[in-house]
Length: 476
Image 1 (cartoon, rainbow, N blue to C red):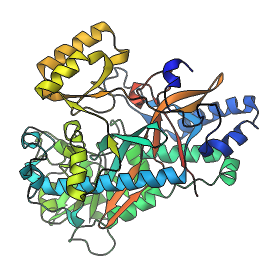
Image 2 (image 1 turned 30 degrees about the vertical axis):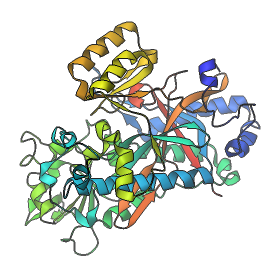
Image 3 (image 1 turned 90 degrees about the horizontal axis):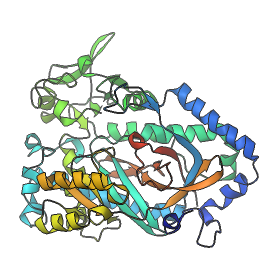
């Protein structure tokens, strides 16, 4: 470890090099294994992923070649007590975000109270006037949420961002676990790890519980994908298959007798719940972008008439906007009447004059992100940026300050990865997946751990060279 890495909280080893309780039984097993055999398992895991077809596309790549997401076979382990604390904070946050979405599309009490500025909604493309005054079935806006968490100490977890539009990565969470169980079955008989394999059934049950008023009988659920050229198409197909739901594209759907129906060999069948992986803009060419061929003409009219549930609801993107993120602590307190259990990362809004001045003066020490950005694109990591990159980013900031927020570079925790030379620490984040239905918040134990495979790197996104690993939540 270098000095910078030594300053980070190591989730496996304490300051004296002793194994922490979470990793005790795993390390006992690991040190009993033949190193040559462990190295051979790396190739086996890669072959498993290649055979299964677990790939992703990177937008902007000239060759448009599909890539394997690197998988690391050392699990990230969380104790039952740690998970209970995290779960309470996640549930509090998700309930508050859902209440916030209902409020801003109805009475707008948080704006009247002066807790967030009105312009933040007016000047935000993610805010949809078409949702004003409309109550989605069951009152649920965020059916599936991914909360990105980072750790800086034994009891210090921060929310990095909220993914409330169409959070991805659940297929990798499931396949990582399946791969681990295939490679090391004896581990799961030795160590009591909470299951994640029932997520598809829990997802189906949660979506069905949000069925619209027009539903008669057992709700019909389908997954709407933009098609095979989408970077997350593998996940769309995987989730639909695991749920036992139909995978559909816009061309498979039409409005029939006031319902959205999918084409089948026996004619058109009505859909009750549509888990859409298509952005708002492309959902309905009669309401949003008229040139869209990915959505369904007229689906918004059916939605407003109570003929279908769209998950996640249109307009939820405002809740994971990075400018809104900077107000999330106030949002949680406003709607729950409680202090937030999970902290936000300190955030400077570059749209504010004083904040912009501070960010420009300290650019080399901060992380700067686009307000609407995702996937690690369009961001600056000051401490690792060159002088030229800093100058170029300064020009962007001065030209469009409202397009950026800035945050300190946190001392992210590390967990071990398997390398040719043995175990080595790397930085990670965690994306637990949350299912919301009327009166229930269901949090999958663990989630997706993303890992920065390059030494010293803080960027965990797969599109930027990161990998994934299995996340274990231990039973009591």
